[in-house]
Amino acid sequence: MIEIAKVQDSQTKSKLTYEKFINLRLTDGRYEFVNGEVVKVANTRQHEDVVAFVYKKFDREIDRLNLDLVVRQNVSIRTIASSDKQSRVPDLSMIDKEFWQSNPADYSPLQKPIQLAVEVTSTNWDDDYIDKFSEYQSLGIPEYWIVDYLAIASREFLGNPKIPAVFVNLLDENGKYQTTRFTGDDKINSRTFPELDLTAAGILNI
Image (tube, rainbow, N blue to C red):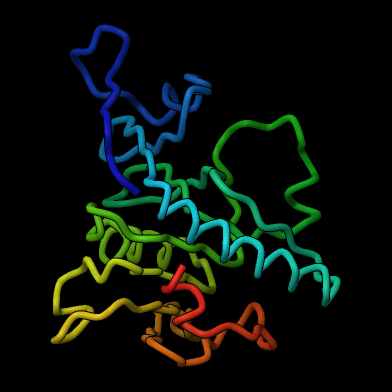
């Protein structure tokens, strides 16, 4: 995701509290609440194409296996960083169907950990690899995908030479993510979708 604006309090002088952010009910775009600031985000068309492709794959697998899950875009979830409440909006969220349908009129960020989150990297790639990685791990999201179709992250993550990759982070018994990198014709290993027939190239070549 690409940060394009930061929204402060109504007087544009002070940072918001999490509670004030919840009550803003912003409807003119996608917003995250990070370090006391409301951050509006937008995506390129290519970014949206990657998200749409993965969405279709997940949605078909849910239907095929009749899973009690729903896949959604632009869903806000509450996380915590440095003891402060934050709100993130994964590019894709896999959510328990019963929980999702239990309060259809609710607009506030989800407080129950989702099953799977997907982030497609953009210029603020460190958010996905570092900040959100830590927040999603602390929240207890069992599976977290990072799709770096531009190979935009540093060599620390992508290696040398840098090539596009999909990273699947799976929560272990100690509550820590174990990361596997998939490139080219590697078949992606998903705990949520163990029968998923999808290679890294299938996503990265969109």
